[in-house]
Picture 1 (cartoon, rainbow, N blue to C red):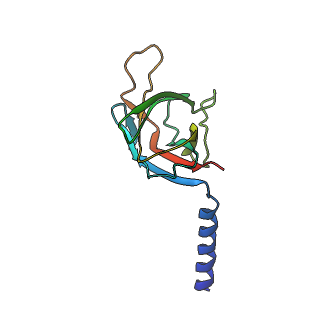
Picture 2 (cartoon, one colour):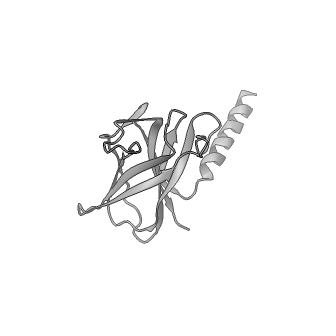
Picture 3 (cartoon, rainbow, N blue to C red):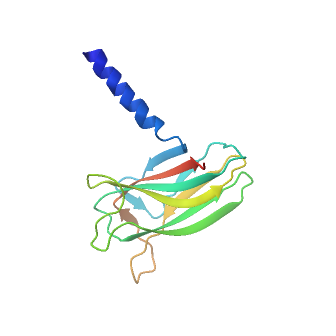
Length: 159
């Protein structure tokens, strides 16, 4: 009976992992219970096939402690030559009633946020992500952004 249960568990695990054929890179890094405004999350990307195109995503795990409707991020892609392209991005994180968007059955939600489409890579790149949330009417950024627990970066191969 134990062998049968182990076999079923193995089959389920294989099915779950094989359903994600587009994934080329998918990594999360914890920022603790609050994401400090000076904390930069960096991802060292693998060398990818330069003849293919890829879609890029920022993944976030957040919980009910997230106090804002939107999220502002500064994302920088550093090329092998040292050139850095910086984007300031805004994402909607909650409905008007405060209910968090994203997937999940508990108070922890996972959001897959589109970043770039049809990207080609030549060499080894780095991605740097930092939060840039500000309270309405205030100039300094939020020192410790509550509710974001993990920041991820995902690359999917374009069909």
